[in-house]
Amino acid sequence: MWPARTFFVCFITTFSLAAAGTAAAYHTRFVADNCNYAAPTPTPYITRDGSATVALRARYEGYQWAGGCWNDNDRDDSPNDPTSDPATGGEGGDCSGFAFKVWRESLTESDASFYQWGMLRHVHGPYTASRFKAGHGAPNITVSKSALTKMDALASESHIGMIYATNADGTDQIIEAKGEAYGTNIWTRTYRGDSSYGGVRRTGWSS
Amino acid sequence: MAFAVPAGAPERTWRRRLAFGRLLPLVAALVIAPILVAACANNDDTGPSTLMDGSPANELPVDLEGQESPTVQTSVRTTNAAELDKASAVATCLEQDWDDRLFGPIVVRVGVNGESVTFRDRSRRGLYGCDNSEGPREEDRRWCGGAFGQLYGGHLRDPRLDMGACTTREGGLLGFAWIEPSHAAEYVVVQQSGYAEVYEVAGGLPVRVTTTNDVEIEGSHAAFDVSEHGSDGRLIRKYRLEASVAG
Image 1 (tube, each protein chain N blue to C red):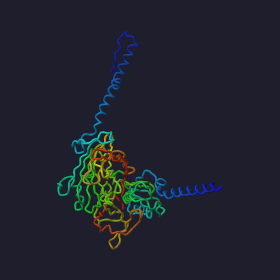
Image 2: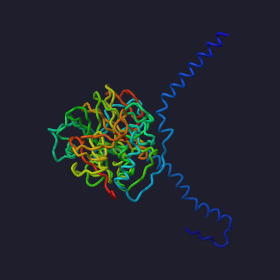
Image 3: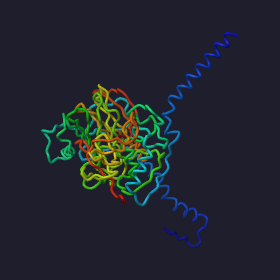
Image 4: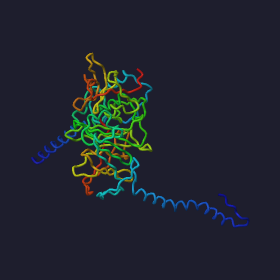
């Protein structure tokens, strides 16, 4: 009787530990379980307010290195992913993937037209922050920081964030995918006064 | 070609001859084609003989263990800011507001389909690169692409894939990435279609390599089949490097 009971207890314990392990690793399946590869919808025009709305849907969501897929439940569904690992399959974009999607760009760099990517469309796009900063890609140009306006971006070699609003004191409210520990949100930043940041604009806005 | 049938000839015989005449080119093609294919295959066995800049590929001084494909040695040159001709192509890479931040050697590489420049910044926490290929580029840019990598404890956290803007002359996709070879490695080898490109480690910097294989624009991803070898050609390690555009 006792051996049978011992076996049963061991079995339950082992099973529970295995299940717990699976649950702990579950967050790395966000992309696999939720994201899609649907074709983007070409759109004839984009507006800055429209892009701000697209960006706000990602607010409070997660951050994923090399990522570009999120839902709109206002929480990070894959918290504490290892940083700088593109293979963890977590929720969120990284800074450049977020800008690519909000700016509704094409995977083809020579194509400056507009594409609506679904929130759950897993896509990063071909640009890094560094290449956005240099104005690479037909849709993107570098502009003077003093000329920047809503939904233009400030980019350094390693980060890009878009201007959601400008404060009276010269700082900006930047909407950005900041990092695994921070997710995607709006923060007041001094990027405009930081010499490592340059101004970048997606061209072709209707308003 | 039309065949005239002589009057009075047995019809069946001439039909056979007619059929044979029509089949002759096909038979010849079947015999000659394998010979041509074999000849072409033999030619491919040597791999490309010139690099992207038209210079001849140097002969590799060692045999690389486990390397079955024909190899093409890429060229590498190490220079520094003081030696640099300000009108050179390399200087145009540095002039993208990086020149005042440059530290240490500048490594210039030319491969079959791509060329690159790699250097560290003054803080030693940033690695910069410019990438180039034979394909068309945006506006009149000298370099079709570029990369930046933050160094943590002197190392990159990811290979800093650059893809999308640089293509081969025929329009094929190219991916560029940095490889941090193991300490004893002297050669980094990347498999291409039908040959392998050999990069010599230089300047104490990560090696900027190129691939035309497994470059996927949809997933902003590329894979590099890599082997690392010692100065005597001994295989140190072999792996597949998966790289994604990020950050």
